Length: 411
Image (tube, rainbow, N blue to C red):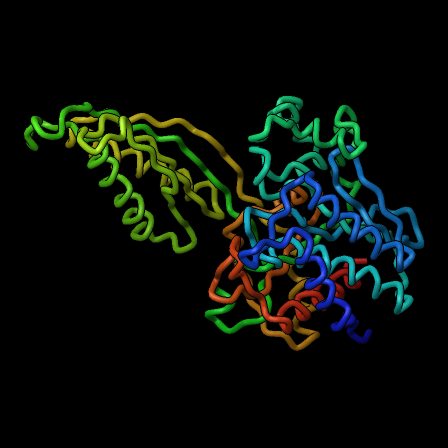
């Protein structure tokens, strides 16, 4: 069977056109979930689909599905990603996978490829979590994991996801009806920019994703004693910030020297109380996040850090407490789909490597109910969630070609 290729000119033009919806003065893109910008992007996709005789509909979670009908009623093969963004984000994150999926459906029709089962494009709702605290809402709803409490958790303007869905004419009370069980989806494949620098540094064209990392987040609190900065001698201080600073450095050093090359540890948020220039800090709260592809590795790192940070607390005369804030399990991706993606890349003459995903994606939830795979293309300099996010046109086209031919091989 000869390889199919996307219409390069049309596909690249679609990336440019979609990036104009929600474009910012800083050359970025802002499209928060279930806002007017998000609606315009989805309606633009629907119009493109209609122009090629592809049907579409929204479900109760706000997910948009576009369909290429098959010759049977077998469970569908689904491809997809998202079009919501972070504030002032890039044009490729999420959108590339959606546009490559739409282009793939169009090319399947244009080439009169026999579809032995339906092929659907899914445009998932609120992947980023930029508007509502619960991210990945659409894909989690598709496996029945969105709660009523989440739907009533308001954004900064006091609008809940349920309110936003109703404003689009959808009924959030029906959200459980969108859940699918194992066996109801043949497979799921998602094309995405890497959002890291591994492919770019290695000068490779395609990443075959082996799994999506787990994420363990903790809220950590260090309590010392607030006191006058001028009258409290250095040797009598119980400075919570100095202790916290040592802990932050320890997180970095401990993960680097752990022997787990794919593991990462991050302190990304820190609050100092009472926050006066002339007050010895009495309390510091900070976030701690551990990511790895193996649950056992995360367990090991967390146990090690708890011991090391407690030792620092004892040495500095402060109290330390931890609270688990989030626990996302690692999601290994299906070996059969990995092999199919690798075969498609090889058939097209593209260089590739297997690699884990250090970021979360909608695919991690679909992997719970069906064989799932992901295709990565390079991110220049590893930059993402920024207007500087860039993937070369040739890499975008290569990724779309791998997606298109993976679909054909999985039918």
